[in-house]
Image (tube, rainbow, N blue to C red):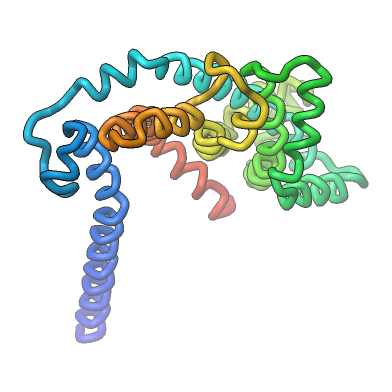
Length: 282
């Protein structure tokens, strides 16, 4: 009885410490977002005269209306187009590459997998000049389509690495049963492996989606005109245009960050399932 009481006391104490740390981490993570949103509703010089941590005297929606009327919608549209096309192609390519590496046995499986993993160590910035020259040669420079190739190429290694490990945990008995029923490899991939890999694909979609949404280097190097630029460059350009109007910049940041927060809230359960799937075999 004493041993049970001690064990229960330790468990309550551990959960209490974990709860306190979780609340502390929530405050640290959430306060910058609250600070950004509140200050986005302030007047131009209100932050300087009233203090940055005070609530706005009134909700100043003019910051948002001015940002939205200043070309923000075009930047947003370009980011959405690039993100959707890049993610769809990336997930399909990663799934097609991960399936044979995870489920087939052939001599070159390990060398190919090792080569893909090694590509994860290639720094993005050393490829900017070759990719720029390639874009100029192919005539794709200064278009939103030129961003899709680099985004996919640099996301494939980490995506194949994660998805291959995920597919290896799918029980082979399911695959063997499908083969007995006359299911071919291609049909098995689309009707069996892909549906079972949805948690892993959702995890990759969120992880790579955030990276593509916030990517700056390639967008800055491969595009020039305002109509072909994405949201990270909108932040950069609005910061130069409204350098003395901090609430306006906060409004731009809020509008840029909001879609990713909404996507994370909607798909957070799939993200957790994808990150924990395969932790326990069987």
